Image (cartoon, rainbow, N blue to C red; front, side):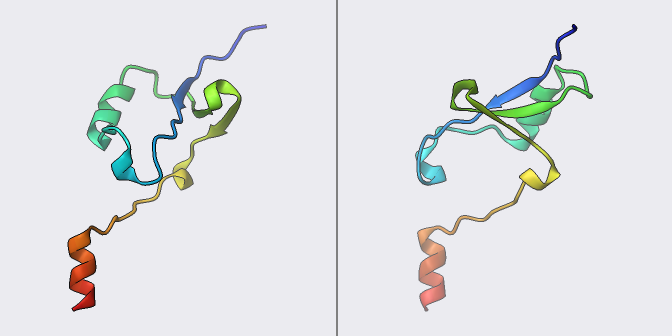
Length: 77
């Protein structure tokens, strides 16, 4: 039986807020990096060192906005 080749993205827990995480790739860096693989290769999220996996779909992405302290001061005025 022939095996399946796939790509994984390792999920890492680094903090409770994004400012506690190391530098993350930009969209451009990710696109450039993914050009190293075939367009039809599936990608999975690798959690807990391969103990569990998750699929990545269009609904996996969500644009978010983090308010900084200056935003909060403006809202209080």
